Length: 111
Image 1 (cartoon, rainbow, N blue to C red):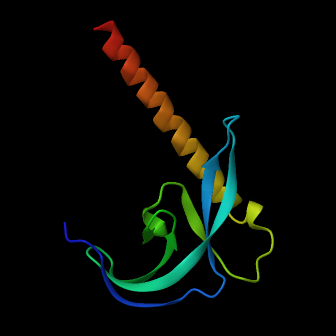
Image 2 (spheres, rainbow, N blue to C red):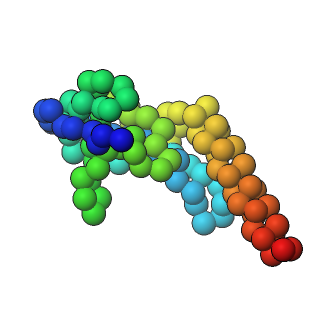
């Protein structure tokens, strides 16, 4: 499959990406990370679209990062409850994935 191609970037001006982050006690909460920029990209499946980019150890597309829920603008002051329904769906999906992995591991031990 063809990779995404950046056509143009512009400053993100206070926008943040919101992620579902697993805590030590196994619960999840929403955390926000500042965007470096918005990128106009040519996506191999979706045509020309805009995606946010953030930096950690390197600059990457937010939507390719595990736990990505969405974006919030500079006017949002409470980043802890921006996407409650998406967080709930993400947690349920993670719980199913973990249960399936445990079941597969258990079957492998039995054989």
